[in-house]
Length: 299
Image (cartoon, rainbow, N blue to C red):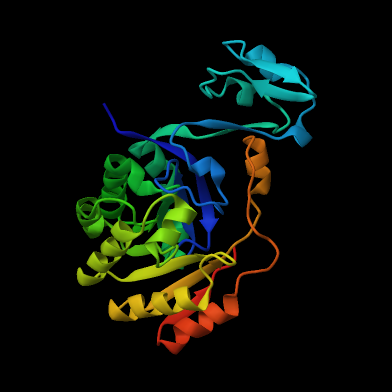
């Protein structure tokens, strides 16, 4: 039986997920639960349906399409009863984009076939394929086979974006099959990291150290969150950690709330402090003063 993974998007012509023009494969499921996450549909492994009330015409097509009869209208909204497995029948029947399925099972060959159609653009731009999420390491057997196929059999440039929360043994296994590597540092203090993401940072920092010791060129990415990790103390600790481990590049990604509509579509709330922007200029200056190449990545 061929391996499959739950993928929630494949974004072509991406310019922010590695060198050149790339196709980014977004895996569902993540071991962290960052309170600022801009892709809430990426957090759970299972497929989910996003419902956009503003697009809904209440035509009844989705209700008729549900094989289990689990949809009903209440207070002008289509709602789901418990037991919905996000089979996708309702989203296929919706003509207005009000119901969108996030997550479908794909095989390695299906992903490779979809991204390989853009190989000319990859070659011309120095691009390739990036595995992101969610967290691609959360579906490791599939990720391993995908990267191996893309890198060895097809000959494409490969990259992963990872939060770092996985076993070093798994990271070690994929090293021969990745050309570019982005790893996140959310906070240098483990207690604060736990508060912000639901997990401590010991495994993450250990994996980053191991990558550096293995000679892998790592770009550190930091989602910059006001009053959480843009403090002088945290930035100085970040600079010291990077300098001490020979890490040369960091990209700061200022917090945004573009994903708020997706939270609403999932019946959830994005609870972040928008009273001030993150201290982007201070962060860049602090890392550059430590001799580290620092940039800001606006998405």
